[in-house]
Length: 146
Image (cartoon, rainbow, N blue to C red):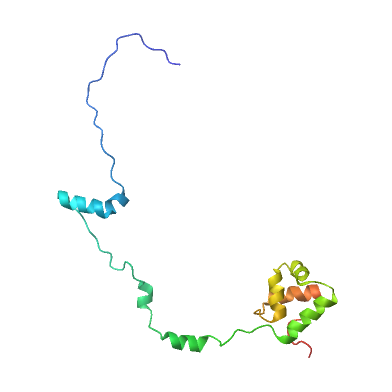
């Protein structure tokens, strides 16, 4: 601990000036602060952003009729699991005395996925079909039963 000097003590009588901190940018954009500055006669700078609130890239792209785009590119319906594949999955699973949940666990998928494949509601995914082929030992992709 520093020792105090028992010598003569002097006081510093020079004035100390405390300044207010600068206002934050968020406060400067506040409408109340802008109105206050306008009333007091302070200089207020306003800048209008030319492309604010507009999707500039969409405006420069060529205009395409949305209806034509939808009719031309989208298929009427997505391909679903074929009936032969559905039946092959069910027969192979039943042959191995597995439930849909057991098959789902072995292929690391949700039971709902297996249920959708067996009901024909799923859009075929080659990776899922490959896992089912490996676990069930049945061919599910390509030409089935032909």
